[in-house]
Length: 326
Image (cartoon, rainbow, N blue to C red; front, side):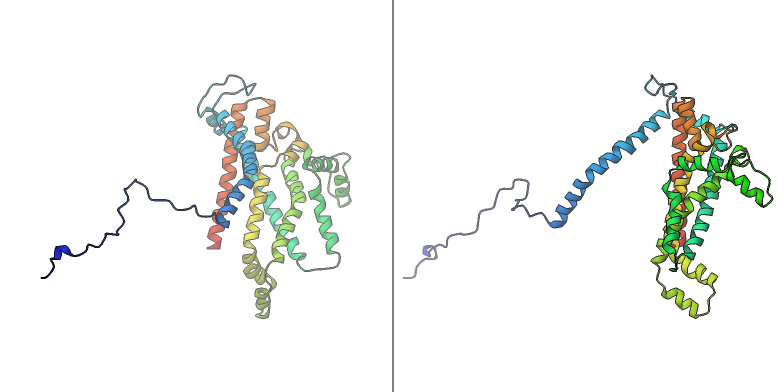
């Protein structure tokens, strides 16, 4: 008699029972940290002291100055000050007697001085590009103006350009030029200080551009020489485009530094940039508002406007660089 299908031995069910959902996926063993992750964390750990220093010495004074520019602070910074909104900015921007002339002198001083420094620095760098006898001596002599502080240089040129006992007028007398007042003249003070700035900072531009020239490949210039290109054509179409990045970097660094010039102006002309404010730039103007007149709120507004002006100059130079590269 056949067996019923119900009597067949049953096969046990080995399918694992479903795990109750807990709302989160099971986590396996923690993956070991890669070298890149460890290096990234170590980098930020090593940078944290420098970032803290930057925050303490730059960010906090900047925020404090901006906050002070909205107050009527006068006489003492820690006195009870009242917020007056944009009144300090309005007073500065409508000051046609001191603010705008100082801003104009700042622009003139920077444009003229930096232009001469770039042109002369590039010319000297081109002359010193090839090795020659005595090159190390020439480079050492070029470094001399950079070794002294601006205050020391200002005092030195005060002695040289003294209208009565200075050596400059004695030398001019040998070629028939009458004595000049130089820094004692209202009209000659600013041009004289531009020339002093050029004398001091042209060597730095020369060294920066010379370093850029030494890294340029020689093959493009040699090929142009073989094709019959003149020295000017090689400079304009070969050397200058390849040197553009270095030239722009040196120009930005020097322009920002020239905009902030204060030491030599104050050392030679004193408070206010002279009796008629003839060399008063925005830096000298803000210094006078702070320490001579104790108008801290207005001085802070001038400094904020000056900072925005410097940022605008840097942005314009960078945009011009981008268009030139394109």
